[in-house]
Image (tube, rainbow, N blue to C red; front, side, top):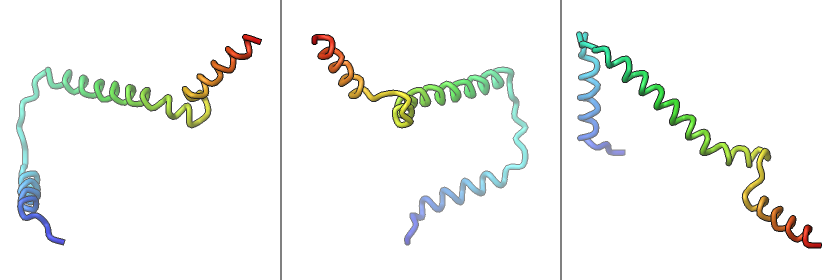
Length: 84
């Protein structure tokens, strides 16, 4: 299996760059903490929205909720039963 020499060069270059750094001595201003909190809250919100999107499928699979087709058939059969 041949590897792309450009990809290998980039991977080796990034690895050397990461391993050769001793200390950063960077300044972190007060806004950094609020940006970090905002990122964590955004990640939690994304997890909640994704869970809500898949909750209907999961509840239908577990049998907690009927599928849309089952509800329509029940609704149609209720209409025909009431007309008797």
